[in-house]
Length: 138
Image (tube, rainbow, N blue to C red; front, side, top):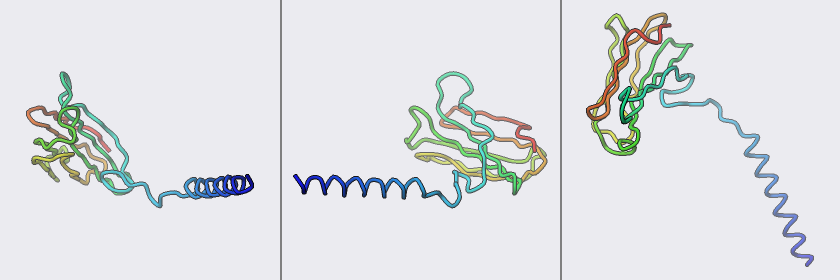
């Protein structure tokens, strides 16, 4: 009986100590799919209507003026090797970056520096795709 009481006290102390360690731990810097300091500014269903096959995500880093984009699979194309592509450029048709291939998870990330400018983004999964022109103007 006495051993059980000591064991319960020891377990309770260990649990409190580990909880304090986890609660006190904080990441140095939160890093997303584009890197640190990027915030998501857009998420678009692909295609825009009908059965969704993917998600085009756009991120922006206000300290560098860079945009980033990725194309993820969704539903039947999530975690499945499928053609996925993503393209980004400034709306003045400069700064093009693109990626495409048979990927399991996503295409990209792709980047363009466009402080104070609009961008064009495109994404596709299989035969479904979307394009957005003159968006996310800085």
